[in-house]
Length: 576
Image 1 (spheres, rainbow, N blue to C red):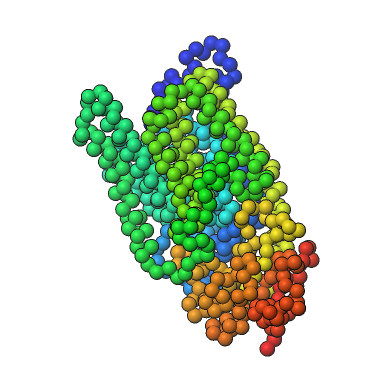
Image 2: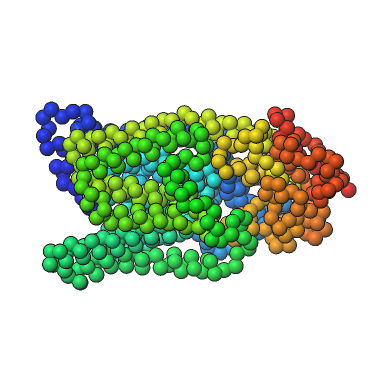
């Protein structure tokens, strides 16, 4: 793993009669930033071409920050009735710090789009920063960061987990540049990046630690083997290199590690829904199939396949091309190869849910980063036409994927926006200061998913768009159950304790007890939002068999049904 390359590698040794492919690398470096600007503009099209960018948790991130900011404001008494600040320093706060600042000047809609724009533009730039530490010839792989930015994790609305990818790349890029240095200045850089990773997401702390530990240890072992072969083994030199590569970064991570330990030792308000800890969830062969489809193909599955195909095909063909022009040693005796193997094993075998859920989807981008860094390191020794062919494959993959995404993805999100417009159409009939219970009955229409998002129900948290418009207490707020988000439910009015142990997942409506909330918590549910097709709602003659529907029929009136498809129903409590 080299971090420098001779200038001769940037020029063809036989300049006479250079063809297009031979000249391509130099032309790329000449117009690199123009290409980055063009691809960056295309990156923003899916975000700014529609009203809502559909994600699962995005609305609640913004809504909870708005709630936190307005807890002490007049006119927001309903928020103080249900919520209180979650005190203490915890990871996962980066996105809330951003929203706290941006919401001072922009609307919630614009603030979310600004964050998304910052993320999708930072993604390829951070990848370039990391690759540039290896050498100029490796940076061509950074253009693959453009189509790769729209990961499944982003569509899930896991904004901190998404930005953790940027924090990871910045840290690895810094380590690659300074891994053989030992000074207080270098330590201060590691320390700042460790704190940044901590406040973005714990996955950034864990993955940087794993990557640096594997690559740094492997590089030191390779140095030992080379020195032993040459008969020049110096233990002091090897320990010094190991210290600068692993020990100094490790010491910088002590404070975030202690903070993480304290964080996990404190009691959590409640458990998040999902499979049990250690639940394997998805077998390794299925994860391998997902890996071959690419990190960008899980979201809008059919449409995304057109975007993912050139991305995956491009880097695989490029890898095959490199193996035909480079010795096997260039790939296997690289410390980054060890890091890639370690990340691959984690991706394939780590349980689907440990401390957090969706583990395979969170890990896949890190594995791809490792692969690109590994291939970038090997590409340093390519020259002439072979280097030009590599650039052609990578640039074609990035450009075609990004172009397809700029055209196809807005069409997909526009279809989801059509359903979201129907969802939020009921909001104008809800009085400010009311308490609302959303009940999602299904996310399908005519037998097909309304979102096109494989396994991602963006309507499950869409009720939080209401707090973007007016003060209202939203009872279905999973993040307010745990104390690593800005707000939590007040214990005495926690709806998960008084209405149901787990507020409505799809089909769980039979367990909801509206009147129990009024009697035990002293809080009245003013409105009930019922979202789903007619066939997913029991016929009126079966309502007496369900506690929820019998209470709904007795105490609430249907005051609105969406005219578009009739999917949204709004019930208002009758006057006592």
